[in-house]
Length: 455
Image (cartoon, rainbow, N blue to C red):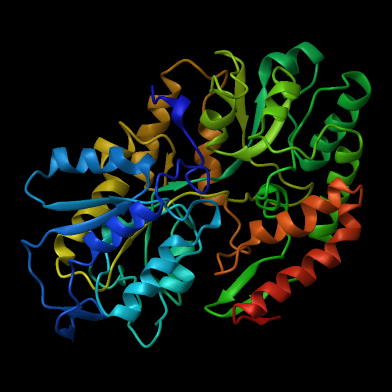
């Protein structure tokens, strides 16, 4: 069984061990790479003169060190310089900032980069300071089509800009419904099949079992759990620099109305699941919890968090609204980029393909649900064989391709907007329905600051 005790959110919650010293090391190591002469190669972007024996520089966060170890073991002939950085965790934007420095210098780019963010393709696919885009185009022959086709349906959407794929997804963070089967059976409740039934259980719990909860909205990614899964068109990226923002829809209002009721009655608290307060108040009190795939290890099967005993945790497929088709949101999931400036694209591609598809890492070592479908199938079987879960994990498989495409990955951070606009509003006792116009204005303003045309 994968050691879930060290699982963190690959999208944001990682151990950042970089600092001024690490930055200096990163710049020095990456600086060994030279742009050299360029020519438009067969992959559809300008390429420097290639050297199949050149050392490649790889940037990873500390949680991806095991991916590097697995690659080294399987490919001892490939020379690597490995630099550990924060992975742009928690919106640090360090990946983009460092690339901008190299763009100005005209050299120094790393060959492969892991990022915890899903919106990096939005900028990495574009020219910067007159320089060619950092990210190499992957679907014009660099990565085999057969490999790309085997990624879970829709998983490469955050990597795709105007039909070109610029990164490979490491893992998915599809939203499912986690639940405590032991508690549900004890209270005589059935697993909800719709959001309406979910709300009804929340209202019953408040009256019959006060203190127990069915969710939480205290984290900056709450919008991705509830509003993305509810088809709220708050973040519909329709082009490299266009976005549609409409929180005045029925889809947005029904989610907000439901949360208003459950926040007010205490069954969906405005508390972050990563705080000591949450663990202290809600250990043994979580009945239901909509949340991403990585909640299994980061929240439930974690001695430092809820530490749910073996045989109690179940998982159900994403909830639909009555009469609607079920879709889900996505909360994180890492990405791998190959630099268009690399002078050893062959080795860079070999590394990126290995760490996203090979069983040696994605099945045997990786803590998160693999984006590469063949690896995901094997990963699921391995987790199920552990005997920890009260149900099978097929809900994760169903949710993988059900991520709603009407919520995109722009340069600006939806999570930062939510944390600044909505979280304090809820804390002040404001209604989410009343906050929707303020949220829409904040999204539009931030999008425009980043050069987006808002529709």
